[in-house]
Amino acid sequence: QVQLVESGGGLVQPGGSLRLSCVASGIRVSSNAMFWYRQTPGEQREVVAEITSGGSANYADSEKGRFTISRDNAKNTVYLQMNSLKPEDTAVYFCNTFIQTRGIKNNYWGQGTQVTVSS
Image 1 (spheres, helix red, strand yellow):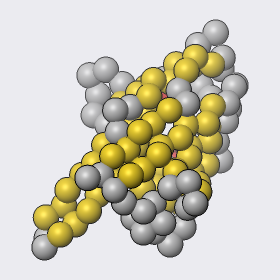
Image 2 (image 1 turned 60 degrees about the vertical axis):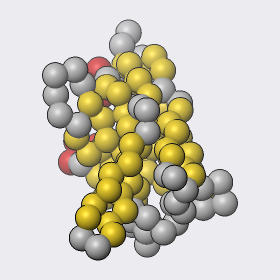
Image 3 (image 1 turned 180 degrees about the horizontal axis):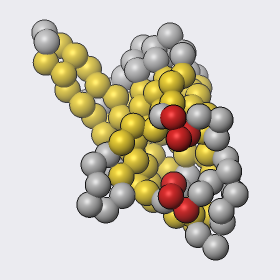
Image 4 (image 1 turned 90 degrees about the vertical axis):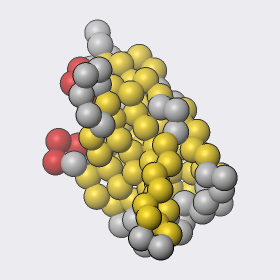
């Protein structure tokens, strides 16, 4: 059974930094594409960053240069380092992965961690 558990959210002032963690079980983060999404009330979840099974990172345009996704294979954990945070980064952040079997894509989500950027 795949489980994703996020942590590291909190309240931070504009310009500050946070590092989110996503501990995975039931999968190997080194073998799966892993994603960070975020969602604000009334809005759809939007992808923030991806790290492929090969270790390549991809980012939404608004996060390039500010956010860094990484992973620790030994800890089976994915991280999102967020710098130069802005009030518009306030959201619930979710860790995500998917497993595709016989053409069926199964998505797995963590419970989310709240990030609030405010002075």
